[in-house]
Image 1 (tube, rainbow, N blue to C red):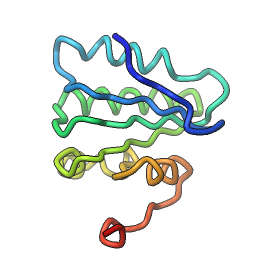
Image 2 (spheres, rainbow, N blue to C red):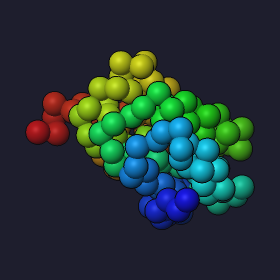
Image 3 (cartoon, rainbow, N blue to C red):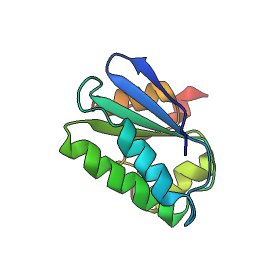
Image 4 (cartoon, rainbow, N blue to C red):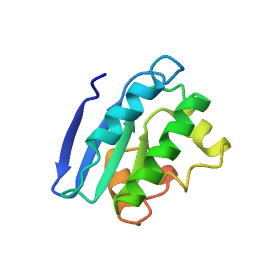
Length: 123
């Protein structure tokens, strides 16, 4: 499994999740994200969800990765650009826990503990 990843800046690593997480690929995706977690260097990881469909397996994976990142002193935020993905995260009660934002700049702010501007003001 290969996930696209890049450094947003010296403090943020972005990992793009472009496919639906299911039974067949969950373990491989988790291994890849964990492999990308830095032992030193960036202090934050941003998972950029590129699919509107978030399965229960995807939610579990995001929570596990958040826990592993936290153990290493790395904060985590999630970009959910699709309304449906944000609705699923909100309905699951994970919007705050996973520091969800609609945009990459918003997730960068969330990873630092800041709140992005309200969605209504983005229009």
